[in-house]
Structure formats: structure tokens, C-alpha cells
Length: 117
Image: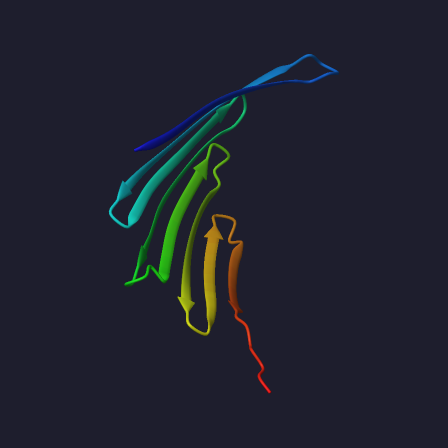
């Protein structure tokens, strides 16, 4: 298991108000997969995010992930992504939505062409 713990403090130069922030991230490997969670807490804000990611295929040419997040401002989101590395190019797809009905979707393809004479 991997972990990351952090603390930061910011001070408003005009008011002198201090804002402390704590960060904790945990990651647990499960074979070719990972489960991870991140928690953040500051004076006015808190959030949590969990994700599951992994890979498949003889050469791990297929990878995927799903994640969900929430915060104390009643915002929640979910997202998913998939990537495939083929001999002729790389393909990526992702999609997500939050509680405000904002939606995101993307697809990309990349490769190269060699011209011979």
C-alpha cells in the first residue's frame, strides 16, 4: 500500500486569516489493478475521491479507470476512461458527469505514418 500525507497553511496578507489544509492519499495495488482514495480537508472545504484503475492484455495494451468524487458543497461527479495501444495507433476515450448535469466526453486517436519511396 502506498500513502501520501500533506499539510499546508496559507495566510491572507490583508486579513491575516490562516487556512490550514490536510491531504491524505491511499493507493492499494490489486494485481494489475489499483484502488485509490484521496481526502482533502481545509477550513471551509472538504472532498473525497475514490478510483479504480487497471490494465489488461498480454502487454497491458488496454487500460481503464473509473472514479467518483464528492465534496461538502454538495457536488458529486463520476468519470470513466479507457485507453488502447494498438500497432497502428493509440486510442483514448473518456466520459464524465456531475450533479449539475455538466457532461464531458472525449475521444482521441494518435499514430504515425511512414512513407517509403
